[in-house]
Figure 1 (cartoon, rainbow, N blue to C red):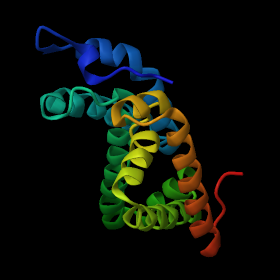
Figure 2: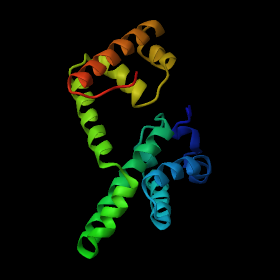
Figure 3: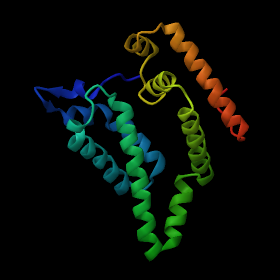
Length: 183
């Protein structure tokens, strides 16, 4: 897993966007290509991803992991692109949009993932603050157990136990609502 942070791409307070593009362009391209089939749209979203990070790098915590941050930007821009396609083609040609959407994304999967996210969010709201912090650091910020342990001044074993218990809780909530989770 990639552990580079925003700070790793800074030198003398300058952000090296060329190095970010060189390092992550193939990865981000693959993500975009999985959702968008039109080559021009892929290139547009791809360039927008790197433009967003370049414009906003000063506003973001320098210790944030860059790879998940780029993935988040990418997903948001893909959604934005589909909205613009929808608006344009609803007016011009609804059949194009329907074909484009059904060829690229399984609507049922999107709805299911959205519902799962809501359930996980509700479960997070009911966690103790320290548990919530550990869960977010591990699953959303991609921090390693060792890093979390050191930062929160608790043993790695305790972090593992807490994560195990939280996964079990999330799994139970998802199962109660008719969804599966991992194993």
